[in-house]
Amino acid sequence: MLESEAVVDRPNARIPWFLVLASVGLVLLVVYVLFVGYLPSKQRVAGLEAELKELYKRETELQNRIAQQDQRYARNERQLSAITSERDTLLRRLEEVEKQLAALRRQQR
Image (cartoon, rainbow, N blue to C red; front, side, top):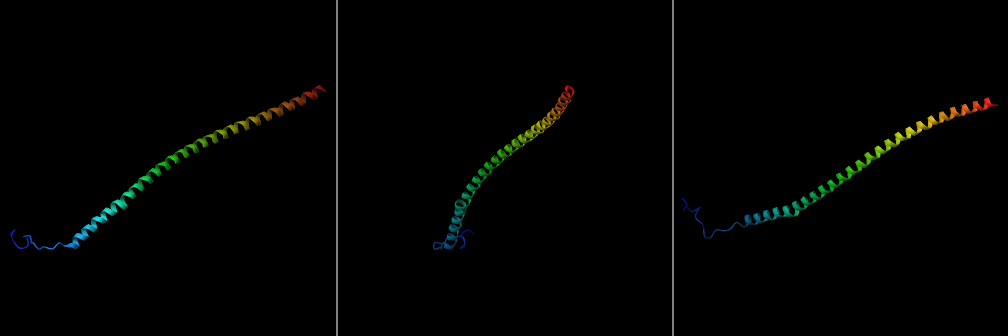
């Protein structure tokens, strides 16, 4: 069976050059896609991921600063309210004292 005409090597066998060229072309295409397309894209993705990490870090810093500013604003508002209330109380007390002083002056005359 191994000695049939289809299996025995033929000394004048022609190499199918079209298949060889197609295989070489396929290998070149795979190498091109891998090294010219995939690796630079992978490097670019890594760069973009690093940039995104940096942006997230910056965003966190900005959010912390905003939170601190909000706390300062709230504290300042409370202080302003307390000072305004104290001022109003002092004004009322001053008016009372001025009235008492005017009444005392009237009594002395």
